[in-house]
Amino acid sequence: MPVLLQINTVVNSGSTGRIAGDIGQIAMANGWKSYIAFGRNERPSQSQLIKIGTDWDIKMHGLQTRLFDRHGLCSKSATQAFMKQIEAIKPDVIHLHNIHGYYLNIEVLFNFLRISKIPVVWTLHDCWPFTGHCAYFDFVGCVKWQTQCNNCPQTRTYPASFFIDRSKQNFQFKKELFTGVQNLTLVPVSQWLANLLGQSFLKDYPVRIINNGIDTGIFRPVSAQNIRNKFDLHSKFVLLGVASIWEGRKGLKDFIELSEKLDANYQIILVGLSLKQIKNLPDKILGIERTESVNELAEFYAASDVFINPTWEDNFPTTNIEALACGTPVITYNTGGSVESISKETGIIVEKGNIDGLFEAIKIIKNKGKYYYSKTCTERARMLYNKNDRFKAYFDLYDTILK
Image (cartoon, rainbow, N blue to C red; front, side, top):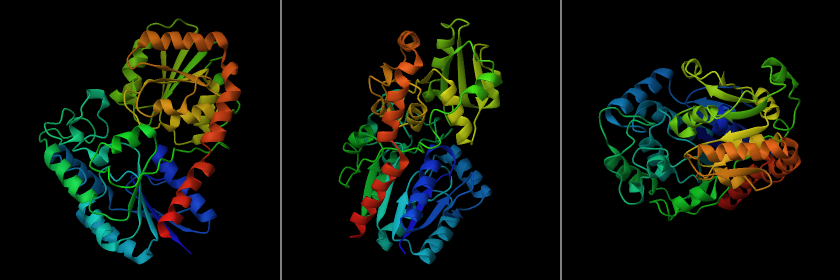
């Protein structure tokens, strides 16, 4: 029986955690044994789970990142113990997802991968693997990652460092470390990220684009009655935004500015906010804390007239395709791979920061009505982003690598 080991920050939590969980399920359905190693936010899984380190390890890793900009270079003992577990389970393929997130020592991991020669697939969910610090750089228009990171303009963004800028050393270290593994295949989840890889120090590795997939059995046009009743939305045109973390690049300020243009016929709902963020919202925005219930999330999508994603930098957000699958048209900024899931029949693309453009796009969809778009939205999601079809591509890739 072939053995698959996936490594990700979380399991069955957030978009990357659900993707890893779904791949694990499909692995077992294809006769593989599935393990998922993770750092935090443990949730039930059909795969066998391996927790890397302790909560104390994560806190210390976070502290050293904040003080010394050494993200990915801590948690050494925890990662060494994990390497022994890998040796015990003898995986045929190791599938990396997010290896940042304060839980893993990349030097220990990649030295092991280099020596073991186990085939490695690395799904890139952001740009962190080829920068000296940040996960994204569009927001500040930085191109230093193409040659040599230094004097990082985003040291205080994730993974934040408050005192030291090691972006130059980190960039060189990653370059030497990540290019030292022979049997490695990179899987960007968007064409946009694939294009960036071609300009990075990872450009010589084989690349295969596999878009994110979702469970279209859960994300579908479910009844909206519960959400509409609970929040008294029956006479409202509902604008929905969803994020795991509403940081600056996700467009929270844009929603606040947009709310000032809306009259009482509209209602903005934002899911995924912290209690502090909810407390500071204007009255025109209804704030909801993060939910781990995908069924509840599907109800929010279905209850909304339009999904708005004013992200300033992103890869291939699953929120867009979750909304489509629920029959809800999408308005997104012209950002990264966010536009790749949208067609002119299923949504509208607006230039970044154009609040007037957002408002005009909303009016266009309102005038046509949600149901003008709904059938095409659901069909597009089922045809292109069903998780069973998308993630089967990984097993075709595994077979190719193993052969």
